[in-house]
Image 1 (cartoon, rainbow, N blue to C red):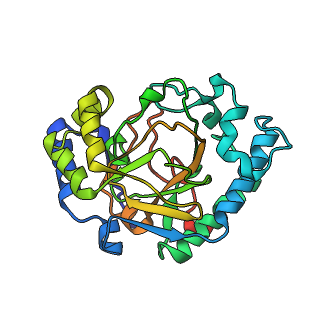
Image 2: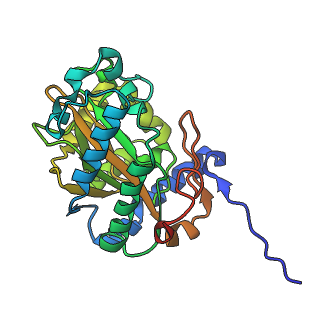
Length: 296
Protein backbone atom coordinates (compact mmCIF):
# COMPACT_ATOMS: atom_id res chain seq x y z
CA UNK A 1 0.00 0.00 0.00
CA UNK A 2 1.33 3.43 -0.94
CA UNK A 3 1.13 6.31 1.49
CA UNK A 4 1.85 9.86 0.32
CA UNK A 5 3.90 12.02 2.65
CA UNK A 6 2.67 15.56 3.16
CA UNK A 7 5.51 17.82 4.13
CA UNK A 8 4.59 20.44 6.72
CA UNK A 9 5.20 23.99 5.55
CA UNK A 10 7.54 26.23 7.49
CA UNK A 11 5.71 29.09 9.19
CA UNK A 12 6.99 32.45 7.98
CA UNK A 13 7.38 33.65 11.58
CA UNK A 14 9.88 30.86 12.23
CA UNK A 15 12.34 32.18 9.66
CA UNK A 16 15.52 33.88 10.84
CA UNK A 17 15.87 37.60 10.16
CA UNK A 18 18.33 37.11 7.30
CA UNK A 19 16.04 34.48 5.77
CA UNK A 20 13.11 36.89 5.96
CA UNK A 21 15.11 39.68 4.34
CA UNK A 22 16.22 37.39 1.53
CA UNK A 23 12.60 36.33 1.01
CA UNK A 24 11.40 39.94 0.86
CA UNK A 25 14.17 40.88 -1.55
CA UNK A 26 13.17 38.02 -3.83
CA UNK A 27 9.50 39.06 -3.64
CA UNK A 28 10.28 42.63 -4.67
CA UNK A 29 12.82 41.82 -7.39
CA UNK A 30 10.82 39.06 -9.12
CA UNK A 31 7.71 39.81 -11.23
CA UNK A 32 4.56 38.82 -9.35
CA UNK A 33 1.67 36.74 -10.63
CA UNK A 34 -0.45 39.92 -10.74
CA UNK A 35 2.20 41.74 -12.76
CA UNK A 36 2.57 38.87 -15.23
CA UNK A 37 -1.18 38.44 -15.60
CA UNK A 38 -2.16 42.08 -16.16
CA UNK A 39 1.16 43.58 -17.29
CA UNK A 40 0.65 46.36 -14.76
CA UNK A 41 0.50 46.77 -10.99
CA UNK A 42 -3.08 48.02 -10.63
CA UNK A 43 -6.27 48.09 -12.65
CA UNK A 44 -9.77 49.56 -12.29
CA UNK A 45 -12.88 47.80 -13.58
CA UNK A 46 -16.60 48.47 -13.56
CA UNK A 47 -18.50 45.99 -11.50
CA UNK A 48 -22.05 46.53 -12.58
CA UNK A 49 -24.71 46.84 -9.90
CA UNK A 50 -22.69 45.45 -7.00
CA UNK A 51 -21.88 48.81 -5.34
CA UNK A 52 -25.61 49.53 -5.09
CA UNK A 53 -26.31 46.05 -3.70
CA UNK A 54 -23.58 46.35 -1.06
CA UNK A 55 -24.69 49.85 -0.16
CA UNK A 56 -28.31 48.73 0.29
CA UNK A 57 -27.18 45.86 2.50
CA UNK A 58 -25.01 48.20 4.55
CA UNK A 59 -27.91 50.59 5.16
CA UNK A 60 -30.11 47.65 6.15
CA UNK A 61 -27.52 46.45 8.66
CA UNK A 62 -26.96 49.95 10.02
CA UNK A 63 -30.69 50.18 10.70
CA UNK A 64 -31.02 46.67 12.12
CA UNK A 65 -28.06 47.27 14.43
CA UNK A 66 -29.80 50.53 15.46
CA UNK A 67 -26.85 52.63 14.36
CA UNK A 68 -28.73 54.57 11.70
CA UNK A 69 -32.36 55.74 12.04
CA UNK A 70 -34.70 53.79 9.78
CA UNK A 71 -35.77 57.04 8.16
CA UNK A 72 -32.34 57.68 6.65
CA UNK A 73 -31.93 57.15 2.91
CA UNK A 74 -29.07 55.77 0.82
CA UNK A 75 -28.00 59.28 -0.07
CA UNK A 76 -26.92 60.05 3.47
CA UNK A 77 -24.06 57.58 3.94
CA UNK A 78 -21.49 60.29 3.21
CA UNK A 79 -22.83 62.14 6.28
CA UNK A 80 -23.08 59.07 8.51
CA UNK A 81 -20.63 60.67 10.95
CA UNK A 82 -23.33 63.21 11.89
CA UNK A 83 -25.37 60.38 13.43
CA UNK A 84 -22.52 58.74 15.36
CA UNK A 85 -21.15 59.46 18.81
CA UNK A 86 -17.50 60.41 19.24
CA UNK A 87 -16.94 57.02 20.84
CA UNK A 88 -18.20 55.22 17.73
CA UNK A 89 -15.94 57.26 15.44
CA UNK A 90 -12.76 57.23 17.53
CA UNK A 91 -9.90 55.08 16.24
CA UNK A 92 -8.06 52.53 18.33
CA UNK A 93 -4.55 53.89 17.87
CA UNK A 94 -2.97 50.42 17.88
CA UNK A 95 -4.81 49.07 14.83
CA UNK A 96 -6.61 52.10 13.40
CA UNK A 97 -10.05 50.50 13.71
CA UNK A 98 -12.96 52.48 15.10
CA UNK A 99 -15.89 51.03 17.03
CA UNK A 100 -18.40 51.50 14.21
CA UNK A 101 -16.30 49.29 11.91
CA UNK A 102 -16.21 46.47 14.47
CA UNK A 103 -19.99 46.16 14.18
CA UNK A 104 -19.42 44.61 10.76
CA UNK A 105 -17.01 41.88 11.75
CA UNK A 106 -20.22 39.82 11.70
CA UNK A 107 -22.84 40.39 9.05
CA UNK A 108 -25.61 37.95 8.12
CA UNK A 109 -26.72 35.52 5.45
CA UNK A 110 -28.27 38.19 3.22
CA UNK A 111 -25.07 40.23 3.14
CA UNK A 112 -22.94 37.15 2.51
CA UNK A 113 -25.17 36.08 -0.37
CA UNK A 114 -24.38 39.39 -2.10
CA UNK A 115 -20.72 38.86 -1.28
CA UNK A 116 -20.73 35.39 -2.86
CA UNK A 117 -22.42 36.80 -5.97
CA UNK A 118 -19.58 39.31 -6.16
CA UNK A 119 -17.00 36.53 -5.81
CA UNK A 120 -18.62 34.73 -8.75
CA UNK A 121 -18.48 38.00 -10.72
CA UNK A 122 -14.73 38.26 -10.01
CA UNK A 123 -14.26 34.66 -11.14
CA UNK A 124 -15.97 35.36 -14.47
CA UNK A 125 -14.81 38.90 -15.20
CA UNK A 126 -11.53 39.46 -13.37
CA UNK A 127 -9.53 36.35 -12.50
CA UNK A 128 -10.57 33.55 -14.75
CA UNK A 129 -9.29 30.71 -12.64
CA UNK A 130 -10.28 29.35 -9.21
CA UNK A 131 -9.17 31.40 -6.21
CA UNK A 132 -9.39 31.39 -2.46
CA UNK A 133 -11.05 34.47 -1.03
CA UNK A 134 -11.31 36.25 2.28
CA UNK A 135 -14.07 34.57 4.30
CA UNK A 136 -15.37 37.87 5.68
CA UNK A 137 -14.86 41.05 3.64
CA UNK A 138 -13.33 43.97 5.51
CA UNK A 139 -15.79 46.84 5.73
CA UNK A 140 -14.21 50.13 6.77
CA UNK A 141 -16.06 53.24 7.92
CA UNK A 142 -13.78 56.27 8.16
CA UNK A 143 -15.19 59.43 9.68
CA UNK A 144 -13.85 62.99 9.55
CA UNK A 145 -12.11 64.59 12.53
CA UNK A 146 -12.27 61.41 14.60
CA UNK A 147 -10.28 61.01 17.80
CA UNK A 148 -6.90 59.32 17.26
CA UNK A 149 -6.99 60.00 13.52
CA UNK A 150 -3.25 60.71 13.83
CA UNK A 151 -2.92 56.91 13.63
CA UNK A 152 -2.96 57.66 9.91
CA UNK A 153 -1.08 57.69 7.66
CA UNK A 154 0.54 54.35 8.48
CA UNK A 155 2.27 53.09 5.36
CA UNK A 156 2.52 49.34 4.83
CA UNK A 157 2.04 46.55 2.34
CA UNK A 158 -0.09 43.59 3.34
CA UNK A 159 2.96 41.38 2.84
CA UNK A 160 4.70 43.32 5.62
CA UNK A 161 1.99 42.04 7.98
CA UNK A 162 2.39 38.40 6.99
CA UNK A 163 0.11 38.04 3.95
CA UNK A 164 1.16 35.82 1.04
CA UNK A 165 2.88 37.83 -1.72
CA UNK A 166 0.67 36.35 -4.46
CA UNK A 167 -2.52 37.69 -2.90
CA UNK A 168 -4.38 40.33 -4.85
CA UNK A 169 -5.94 43.34 -3.14
CA UNK A 170 -9.47 44.33 -4.14
CA UNK A 171 -10.75 47.72 -2.90
CA UNK A 172 -13.92 49.63 -3.73
CA UNK A 173 -15.83 52.57 -2.22
CA UNK A 174 -19.47 52.51 -1.16
CA UNK A 175 -19.50 56.30 -0.91
CA UNK A 176 -18.76 59.01 -3.43
CA UNK A 177 -15.36 60.64 -3.72
CA UNK A 178 -16.38 64.06 -2.40
CA UNK A 179 -12.83 65.34 -2.11
CA UNK A 180 -10.70 62.30 -1.52
CA UNK A 181 -11.23 58.79 -0.16
CA UNK A 182 -8.55 59.06 2.52
CA UNK A 183 -6.59 56.29 0.80
CA UNK A 184 -3.17 56.45 -0.87
CA UNK A 185 -1.13 53.93 -2.84
CA UNK A 186 2.48 53.86 -3.93
CA UNK A 187 3.82 52.54 -7.23
CA UNK A 188 5.66 49.25 -7.23
CA UNK A 189 8.90 51.03 -8.18
CA UNK A 190 8.64 53.40 -5.23
CA UNK A 191 7.59 50.57 -2.91
CA UNK A 192 10.70 48.65 -3.90
CA UNK A 193 12.80 51.80 -3.38
CA UNK A 194 11.45 52.11 0.18
CA UNK A 195 12.19 48.48 1.02
CA UNK A 196 15.71 48.78 -0.39
CA UNK A 197 16.36 51.65 2.01
CA UNK A 198 15.62 49.29 4.90
CA UNK A 199 17.62 46.40 3.43
CA UNK A 200 14.31 44.54 2.94
CA UNK A 201 13.69 44.45 6.68
CA UNK A 202 9.92 44.75 7.10
CA UNK A 203 10.18 45.28 10.86
CA UNK A 204 12.36 48.39 10.45
CA UNK A 205 10.12 49.72 7.70
CA UNK A 206 6.94 49.34 9.78
CA UNK A 207 8.59 50.84 12.86
CA UNK A 208 9.53 53.94 10.88
CA UNK A 209 6.12 54.14 9.23
CA UNK A 210 4.51 54.26 12.67
CA UNK A 211 6.96 56.37 14.67
CA UNK A 212 9.00 58.45 12.21
CA UNK A 213 6.94 61.43 11.05
CA UNK A 214 9.55 62.75 8.56
CA UNK A 215 9.64 59.30 6.96
CA UNK A 216 5.84 59.28 6.74
CA UNK A 217 5.95 62.70 5.10
CA UNK A 218 8.52 61.36 2.64
CA UNK A 219 6.16 58.50 1.77
CA UNK A 220 3.46 61.10 1.08
CA UNK A 221 5.65 62.51 -1.69
CA UNK A 222 5.97 59.05 -3.30
CA UNK A 223 2.32 58.01 -3.09
CA UNK A 224 -0.79 59.01 -4.98
CA UNK A 225 -4.32 59.73 -3.80
CA UNK A 226 -6.75 56.99 -4.86
CA UNK A 227 -9.58 58.50 -6.92
CA UNK A 228 -11.51 55.34 -7.79
CA UNK A 229 -15.10 56.42 -8.40
CA UNK A 230 -18.21 54.84 -6.95
CA UNK A 231 -19.13 52.00 -9.30
CA UNK A 232 -15.56 50.90 -9.93
CA UNK A 233 -13.21 48.59 -8.06
CA UNK A 234 -9.47 48.91 -7.73
CA UNK A 235 -7.29 45.81 -7.83
CA UNK A 236 -3.58 46.09 -7.11
CA UNK A 237 -0.41 44.11 -6.60
CA UNK A 238 -0.06 43.30 -2.90
CA UNK A 239 3.56 44.50 -2.94
CA UNK A 240 2.39 48.10 -3.39
CA UNK A 241 2.71 50.15 -0.20
CA UNK A 242 -0.47 51.97 0.80
CA UNK A 243 -2.18 53.71 3.70
CA UNK A 244 -5.32 55.34 4.94
CA UNK A 245 -5.23 59.05 5.79
CA UNK A 246 -7.48 61.33 7.87
CA UNK A 247 -10.69 62.70 6.36
CA UNK A 248 -11.99 66.19 7.05
CA UNK A 249 -15.41 66.57 5.49
CA UNK A 250 -17.29 63.33 4.82
CA UNK A 251 -17.61 59.68 5.78
CA UNK A 252 -15.86 57.18 3.53
CA UNK A 253 -17.17 53.63 3.53
CA UNK A 254 -15.29 50.98 1.60
CA UNK A 255 -14.84 47.24 1.32
CA UNK A 256 -11.55 45.47 0.78
CA UNK A 257 -10.89 41.81 0.27
CA UNK A 258 -7.93 39.65 -0.63
CA UNK A 259 -7.98 36.78 -3.08
CA UNK A 260 -5.34 34.15 -3.81
CA UNK A 261 -5.29 32.01 -6.99
CA UNK A 262 -5.54 28.32 -6.11
CA UNK A 263 -2.61 27.59 -8.44
CA UNK A 264 -0.41 30.03 -6.51
CA UNK A 265 -1.52 28.69 -3.14
CA UNK A 266 -0.58 25.15 -4.17
CA UNK A 267 2.93 26.35 -5.08
CA UNK A 268 3.56 28.11 -1.76
CA UNK A 269 6.37 26.59 0.30
CA UNK A 270 5.69 28.65 3.40
CA UNK A 271 2.74 28.96 5.76
CA UNK A 272 1.90 32.64 5.91
CA UNK A 273 0.57 34.06 9.16
CA UNK A 274 -0.34 37.55 10.28
CA UNK A 275 1.97 39.37 12.64
CA UNK A 276 -0.88 41.16 14.44
CA UNK A 277 -2.73 40.36 17.64
CA UNK A 278 -4.92 37.63 16.14
CA UNK A 279 -2.08 35.81 14.31
CA UNK A 280 -4.38 34.99 11.40
CA UNK A 281 -3.33 32.03 9.25
CA UNK A 282 -3.73 32.62 5.52
CA UNK A 283 -5.15 29.26 4.59
CA UNK A 284 -8.57 27.89 3.60
CA UNK A 285 -10.81 27.53 6.62
CA UNK A 286 -8.90 30.27 8.44
CA UNK A 287 -8.55 33.69 6.80
CA UNK A 288 -9.89 32.31 3.54
CA UNK A 289 -13.27 30.72 3.05
CA UNK A 290 -13.22 26.94 3.33
CA UNK A 291 -14.46 26.72 -0.27
CA UNK A 292 -12.81 28.40 -3.25
CA UNK A 293 -14.54 30.53 -5.86
CA UNK A 294 -15.78 27.60 -7.96
CA UNK A 295 -17.53 25.84 -5.09
CA UNK A 296 -19.81 28.52 -3.64
